[in-house]
Length: 516
Image (cartoon, rainbow, N blue to C red; front, side):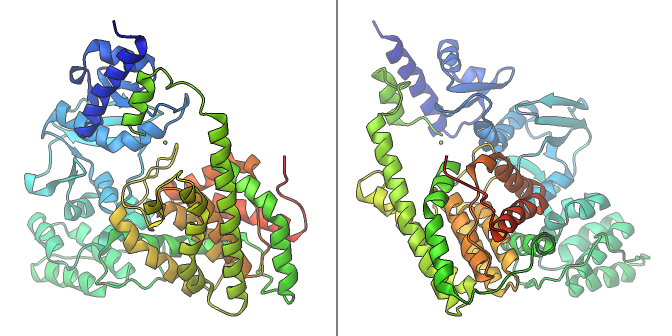
């Protein structure tokens, strides 16, 4: 007779089969009641709404939203298809944001369907679906993005309300830049006689410096007998050079975010002291901070059913605490790696002090930091040597964050852009704050992104003569919330002032972090 552990292992085998089939939204009919109840009671699946479930990491704590946020879009794709088949699409405004590659989990996803009931369907962690009873656009205007039916790019630009341009300037500008010429827009504008929308889109393209598309819209509409009055829907103009031949939403998004946020950072920070006269003393102060910095940075730092987990369950050891000696070994390797990376960063700072451009130095040497960070763990077999190869080759998620980092292909497009922005930025405070933020926003590695982001921040702070600044683990919640606000809401102010206060305290000689 099978033991309870063997029975649970059998249920996990069923769950793993669903995951390997690419099923994220699990219906009641996908798995038998016995397996479902067993997985539910042991915390391996979670109910989203009646009859629908998602898998949960076996070590996920109560209240942890990671599994839901990382499953959200895949869950919605299947649920909406099963519920409405082809009789639905995402609203024009949320479609535009997806085209602009803003895939942050929305508080409420707006759906159009002739089967809609104009009521909200509550999901997990305060999210919901709102299905409007509404006729759908023409079939030619609907396409699929990551399994979800959306309004195509042109239609989303035309049908989004003017307030979206004011509320989400980065998303709307990114979407505008994805079109190569005016012809696609004009086909819709002329057919529908959309004179007011034509004027708004012409003004929007003029705002981002694409006079050609703006002029083509106005001239063509007027040639067809329409009276078009150009109007700029944005609150402000931008001072960023965008290559009209660059249509990658990832690249343009990063450039727009940088320009949109840098003024806030400059306003939050004290003036840079400049490279210190006595570099030896500055470097010694960094060395004296090592233990405190390592303690806090390491302390600040999970999701498929694996064969190893199944075998652990089968043997009855799945809920046992990890071997204490092994845990200490992992901690020791992490600490050793941090020491090696810390010294590599210090060498980079020395190169910056020799007069090299800080952006170029970090571009050239950040790979060395990463290799040093994980070399000890590779040496003892805790991670594979291939993990040191470079930027990630699969999707990664951030614990309890609504932000989904850029996909693996986009990473290789935007990392050179980040270093180009660092190289050309005049203000050290902007290099430090936005360098850290954009790095973790991209999340170029499978692990170690937070530590690397803080190393980058301090290298950039040093380029302006600011002191090496430790982010205390006691402020972790505020730190993570500020990063979340910047990532999801495009609001850099909390993060800028959070770091500015720490830097000011360090400049005043006040300890902002200490060993516990």
